[in-house]
Length: 284
Image (cartoon, rainbow, N blue to C red; front, side):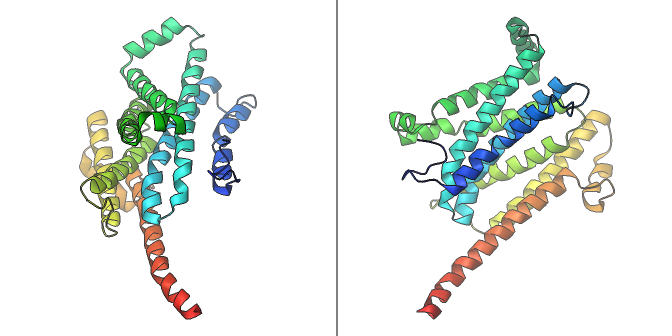
């Protein structure tokens, strides 16, 4: 079945738009390369850009389940697989481009992966994505059985940890986006932790904003701890920047804004659902 079709064989506008959008970062990178728009080291920048989008898509795929449940939008579920496979494809291209940068010397690539800790972490994450991509089809789901398939695909959580760690380590001092990703990933894992502790597998609406606040605080503390360990700057100097805006919008602020948008969307959806029966009653 073509990826832009739903299970009835009809064209799905949502799947079509998502499918097309998944190609945009790769096309942009491919077009930018011959135009010298990737800086003085274009291949190195292409490697980073493609890998970064692979991690972004992994994070987005993990966001689908909370979004579907909180917004009560079941049509989001079919695009989760599509985004997850795209994450695998981008990371695979990331590895291929890295091999090209090493002159296609596979022995050297293998030794670098073994000797460099952050590359080892990234490669283990890639192997996990290979397993998820290989079992992403309906046929493999039926072959494995629903329960075993779900257990296997929970590998996405440790893979997310490994991918974020890989990105964080290789970013060195520029840890702005890695910290944002870690904060959002913490929110996603916090959401799942709540669902695992409840029989109805539903997250109470009041816990959504609290999760956002907790993830934002965790991000701020993580950034402060990183700069303390890396440069010796006191957390007392770093933490206030998340409130004063002296240093601009910090990762914790981005996490707070993103989770606040989620909270508002959930609230709006809840109010819409409550108002719908009244509207139908008046119409009748």
